[in-house]
Image (cartoon, rainbow, N blue to C red; front, side, top):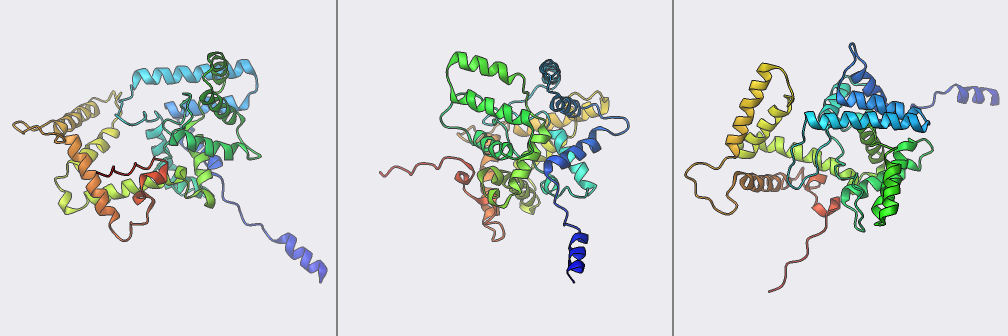
Length: 340
């Protein structure tokens, strides 16, 4: 009887563990970048170089690869200058392609990529997390990076270059001494920013842990998802047929599908026409009386506030992360109004 029990236990197959988003992202890059012919995009080139960086410990070799990454990024900034948006950190040059790659990969329903594909249409917002400005009050983005990197770097298996970079950046934010900062900046040059998809995967792995799900870091992506759901809901309403916001978002979506640097004549002409429509939409109407808060942008801002209010008033949405107050995501709670 004892022998039978032992044989039974040994022969049982252990349940498969869900793959981490970090490991799934390797398969995703293989799927996206190494087809026939290989994809020659900025993201694929940088991913290839960062993979080389992780595989070598030679200082000179690391420096050469780091320099190659910087040259690629510098050339991209010249070819595709970022368009600043007031009040928002610049978006990553990889964000658009990463979204397309992730959607395409997850559409194939890959086995064991549940963590990565659970947020197939959205990304973790980390804009501003690379700040090295001395500060005693970190921004929400910096706090999130600290939170996630502390968890990740304590794991038995982690990427040493990622952890070394976050460690140096933390030291830079903690000191105002010019000599110390100069030395730290020199050290930082040996550890370029991590692969965009690697960072996204680390955040995804962190947020799949139940106790982290309601942290401000992880609620932000749920808020992003909620904002998209709210926009889709609102713009589908018959009453939104003439909505300025919905018209603007529709034009932006069309623009995003056509690269700024396209050499295709027809696509370039289409982009020019969409840009004209976008510009016309935001122009003040002729003969209109200019009042405070009457600009198109102000009207759209008010419309979004009212749309969110209506969306969050629905019973099914009241408890969604999107409808939580801003302070749930690291924002400071506004002071009470003064008593008159």
